Length: 400
Image (tube, rainbow, N blue to C red; front, side, top):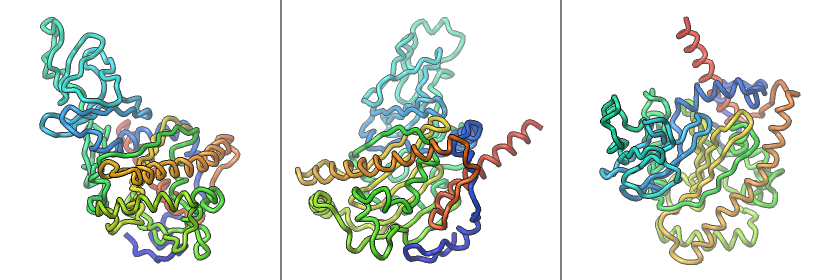
């Protein structure tokens, strides 16, 4: 890890410059053949955040998540022993999807086709006329998916034998995250969107502040830019293997709208009463390879991940996590306003992201150009392509 030069707009350090300064190929942002390599080399082998333990508050709780890149539906459960487990949502009789609901409370799951019944630890408990089958029940358990939790966030890995455990994968982020209120969250505000854009192009929008003053002058620019930092550049960047961080610049005299002032005026006292305002990572931004980022600000404990659907379409999930139920109407207003503001900001981003995808789809550009303050974009693409080249070499070696 390099020791960065700090200060808004400071040039990236040696480690960032080692990533290169030249143009980036445009093809990976729209070509189907590159997307197919990403699916196999990255998304089928990497730890992916898909939820939070507050969605599994008791034994028998379950959630279901669709992972379009793998044509997979994942069932996540909490057993009687309190353990969180994950399975492919597929009956082991003839492949019927087992659970249609997106969440709920069940101790068993019964297939709608032939009534095979499974416990929430994945074991086959009963199947009509099973003695006529040529297999033991023990061989018919639900296909397991690797799952683990860090700071309350649930991650899955579709690799049958992950090369790293979750904590090894996250590295130093583990210790940092465990100081955050997100680990104690009991509820959340959520915004799910689908966008006609490549997952990297979508994700990249949230890794750079170069666009803030142009796209968000009404909704968010006043708090993120200022005379001393007209582009809202971060204080520093750091790199941790395939992950990266930045420290968000704080405007000492933000231009907030009257509605923002009212909302934060109602939210901050409630957070102070809960003891949630004083942790050391209030301006930290963590980017976890390949598709997740989290912001540590106590007023908006913010998580956003972007899942690929196709080479030119993605699904994003934005969540703001909260500790405890609303104590009063003022706190409720502050929480609701926080998500409304996030949606407003995102609606402005969405227009230009999709316009960028349409331009790239034309094939008119062979390359795209990144300035020094877009180094997080370069870092992501560097590691995406490194994974793909390693995968291609692996496949070539296997074929030989």
